[in-house]
Length: 587
Image (tube, rainbow, N blue to C red; front, side):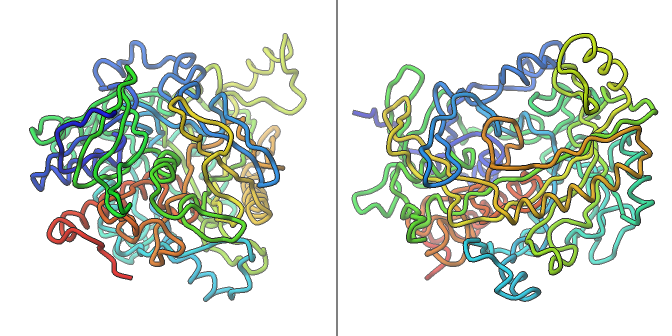
């Protein structure tokens, strides 16, 4: 029997970026807000001190900030005719655990999706015809437009102190920025980061080919910055320890460095760690949430009553909770009916390693220090002759030449011994890598459901992931890789290594933690779990916030859009739901 606790107005599941934003907004309305986090407590001091956090073995190799598969994992298969098996070791993606979530260990690459990304089905049909969309591609519009989200993108960028240069300022193209981006009302709060040797080389080569490179937007502060909440951030020192590490310099935007110093002082906010939420508790009719059930580290089960339940966990965890709680009809790929688990998507990447004669100083970097081109992202180019949908950016990142993982070696290098050491000594300072970062569309056969065989620590069915890269994504990625190779060749290299993404998707090697879908948003309850405000169609006092809402994945990193959607949903709750609790969209 679960121990019943005192009720609160709002309970948040997870305590990362989205929960921090929602909590800050709703506590401003006077609501009593509680966040439940399954991981440990974390603060910049002492947890991210530079005396110990810059430990590649602990954090990058032994994954000190991530979910432990021994306690929580999922099963995986490429297609429905295979038997899914548990993921025993983190590989392709690495869900965070602990206060701050993935906002602690991300790189800070903060993009806005393109306007057409939000209305992609309508846009593709209008430009290329309905027959251009493959029959098994479950492409759909988001139910919200870029123009509606623009003010909320702006809020997130100013919260984080993003460094960059606008490319479309109130409809006027800015030569130094990304001319393909949607209209923005004002420039980034900070100027771009300092350029590295590698980004300058990329910039020169790209311009020679006729492209328009620009400094990638970075949630790494190029200058000291005081954000709108009055939280002071420090200037980046280019230490090269961003991805998979916390920032001890208050330079990389995270909940800890931007919002928690204000939120944690409020009397009407509280949080608990070591609380593993296992389901949303519904009423007898299954139409209204009464709160959540969670288990603490001692195995004790609690019921936390609340008037509003907001799922703010990692994308896959949000979907798992919905399935375990019976919220939304589970998706059935055989009949293409149901919604919960539908439209899982990911990211597809490739790279071209470049070996030059100049010294690149790779050890000095920042998580989002990069130079990029956007000519081949979204629908910025004519897809008709190419026959695929989607695109991505091409960039050269200087994230830091950490000694264990970050090295590039020419083809034919021995895998061990004296020859390997010699090649490392010759190429470590004189190599860079150009990466492509591509979109992944949604498909009838790519989805999340409950595994019929394997169960978790509490006896609940594991989440099952069925996913593979499709012909469309391989064609798009090959196209991007060919363009990246042209830039690499224009850099006058000694040699290059082209690394295409080939074959079936594998859950073993790390790729990105950009998992999306499964609780997608839209205007039609037959094809979406949540409405345009991220409110569940079937349970109006349940909101689901995060990348689980993406109907398909665009060619950018997702965090900027996740942050914008969190502000968008919080605004709808403040201005609409609280005055009249119930469905915000009528069907």
